[in-house]
Length: 546
Image (cartoon, rainbow, N blue to C red):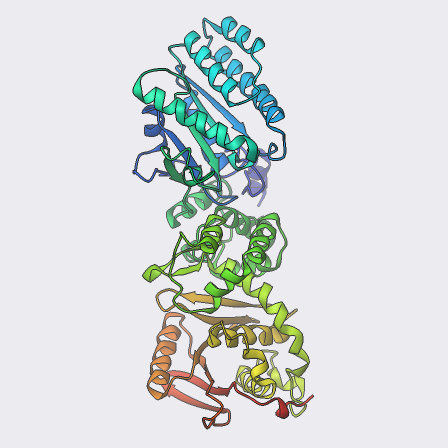
């Protein structure tokens, strides 16, 4: 213990960064990422060939960190003049004020770089900057024409972060100028900026202004999500410094839940190493990850604030993807384009649109289920004392809980299922999530929703006091479909190493059809105990009891 304490005092541990640009001396960072343009060329290859390109990805994906590190590498070659700029605070500026602010930053960084490499014609460039005033895109182009007449042996590379922040009035002229510079450069007529990268959440190469795309000659680079191997690499850096490992199961589960989203990969690591298992070399396990996930799912941070704002803004389209089956992925459709651009959805199997990762899915459902809690007062029938829903050891009596859920659905009736444009099965799942919250809120458990790849269904896994409950939900579509659903549940139980599970079937029929009462039964198949519930969701307002 003394040796460990001495090591901790003598070696300052780095951190997992979630708030800003990553400094590799202070924070763990995934290096040597295999980031390529759509033509499979690396950023270095694009720069060497004098290409103009866009780097785009949702926020908090590591764009700024990536190109900052890349510029450091370029700085090792004295023939490169790499310049990093940002338009983050320029959005509402008048055009002339925008160019004035842009000029100050641009000139300062060009001169700084030329001084670093001891440029022989530094004083001439300095004199040029003193006698130049940028008021518009024409002045911008003229400056670089003069600059390259002075430093003919240097390659000027510019990266503009948060390019989306450019004032709208300045956008077309600025992009038109870049296009003209690029075309003149490629034709060998004139030399302006050797290579440029525009960084933002939008793909600038596809932006249209007055039905014209002024930057459509640019290569497109997208910052990808972390791969599982990159998550392992990030966590192994922490392990090497502290001696505390992440188990393979924990790392894999984190990658699955986050989808490799960099902010969340780092944030859950912060929670695990600072709150769940701090100051120890004991391994971080999948069980620890479950505890960390429970904290992450309910916390407020800038990342979740941003995605929830977007979820509300594009609510109709997001609800359609959440609650309808087989929504084809179509990036040309406006709603999907916006959701995909902000990282909320992605292209899934069978070319279907799906939520980007399980954590986002859970947060979205938390948002929408708040609206459905207005009927909470009808959850419990007076015939059941509340304590019956818990066993003597404090664990959940899930069979009785689900039976009461069926009674509740039958009492409340169609009122809960009148969102006709949504798939009924998902409405039932959402209702069950709300219902289960009343039992697990404040307990040492958390309610997790899993998306099972390939089947596009939502299964609920409830963790409570260490016990895992697996619930499969389907619409009743006849006995044959019911038997197939049982087979799916058994397969799921085997993969989860669980002995029992629950199959809830919602039985919805037309008004003139006979509808059987709710039923519940048990069956044992292949060593697995299944609890089966068939729930009437047509209901009648007259049967409600208050």
